Image (cartoon, rainbow, N blue to C red; front, side):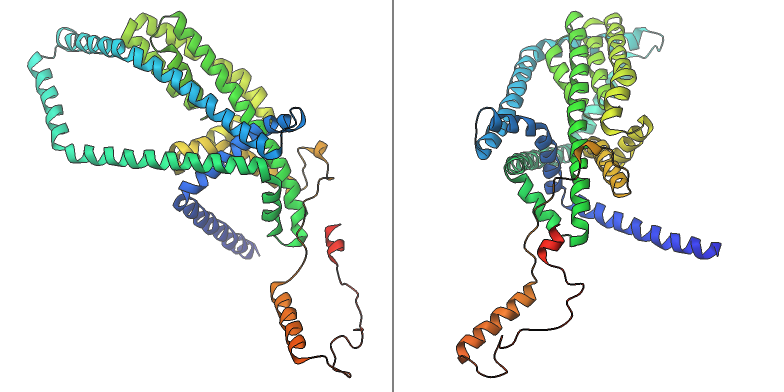
Length: 405
């Protein structure tokens, strides 16, 4: 008996693992479409309150509200990028000069400090690095071409994401009804209710993550500005974007701020900047993440960390970015399907609109029969179509209205 149970569980686990592998391979193959659609879902739950406000308060039509929301998002993002780019262009020259001075100081310390490296050794290493770069020029050119292709993919993905966001805001209910309508009729209502709760979780995650990222960016940006670290505003934007990768993103972007402080103002200011970054991280880790994010997605910090680790290992930066929302939505959906409703206040009064029940083969056969009847002329007698009503036991028959209730 134990062997039979182990065998039964083994083939089931192998089947689940095979399905996950096939699904992961399909997603990886179609990532240029899947990733923009996933981004569009995040943007939709973020912009849905704005679109609803425009429809109810400003009396916009649904299309106008969706279009205004998407255009407003594009304007805000482009404005931030322009401001950050302008700051980078104005400050990069001074930062480059200070970096060169810092490099010269480092080389002088290596030659006169405790390591006692000779100038000849340093020059030979620099020359060797230049020769290596020259020998791998083809690789560098190929990398540049690959970067160009990647930029093209990013632009195409951006267009797809904005296009999908508009139609998710405009016809999201219709699209969802179509998707649910593909499922067996007995499971449609359960999937619809689980999907509603999954979208609530996704919206809570998105809004909470924006708040956490804003706190990180403001804290580190103000610290950099007080310490007169160059490019404080672009660094704040970098921290804001990096904070969307939980646990890891803010640490990496904060390290960039510390590095800039080290290059421009020396080790003392860098240590102070490091203290600022660590203070902001402690605020996020001990206050914002447990109370806000934990309440929003109901995931333990260990689950968040493991999700980010697995996502980054499987799909790099994109995997780390989408790991937590995917796990949070799956957690909500699976718990609901197993009888645990995290959002009972949503109720069950919202029902998905089902398509009329019908079978394509039967409908086609009936239409052909009617057409043949019309071509052959009216029949008389017992063989006439519909001459006598059909009789029989109709117990167990279901109508469309019965299925919809």
